[in-house]
Length: 332
Image (cartoon, rainbow, N blue to C red; front, side, top):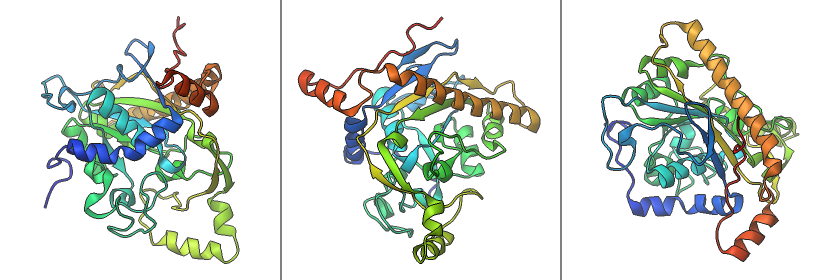
């Protein structure tokens, strides 16, 4: 049988064009702004500071000095951020990030913003199920310790949302809250292969919706609740505390999306067998993500194009996308 990591073939240009159509719509509506931090802590617009292995770009070749790279960050409401990030690295750096996704997403099942189908079975909800599953085509693999270990050993740039479904389907009052497991096994997997971990923070999607009912409200609703619970119980879980029940929301005018990739964390001096040291690094990374979210929430008020009408006006008048604000130009 085919190995989804070693036997993976880059999608053709035609596949890329077709697959990114829905991402282009999100980009037009939400005008994502990306920032990245260099090793010495300087934050610049764009993703140029994110370290990537030499062969991750199309036509590149691996060198002896290359290590794997693992991007870890908070997942946003309904998971619309996944495609935006993968598309940005493809467009800007010609690099395909290998996503570690919930098993249902890899199978092409229902997840708002991730799969457009409604079924939970193999091949349901085409075009995201069966052989044409967009995430499988773009190298997504089910999240598991073994798959993460293989990706790091093969030195593939990879993308992981430790909060998973729990963050994607968060509850009311939990906008941009980092809801990660107590233990961070991904740090040990990275350290075992001297990989670099890049924490990132993201905001914007929760402001594009008004949540009417979260999973608690839905599960406690008479009649409907027990039916939804029965269906949710049939689905595989990637983590103990997750409930595969989407909150009910009303779309608002799309807020701008902001992504901040933090300072790279090297693990070459970290012994993966030292669980306590790895746990300290994990807690530091989680803190970095939380601090990054706070920074973006504070800085976005300075963006003249934060609101949708201002972006539409600028783009109509100038016939070009709105610029990325240089929030961090006046760093010490």
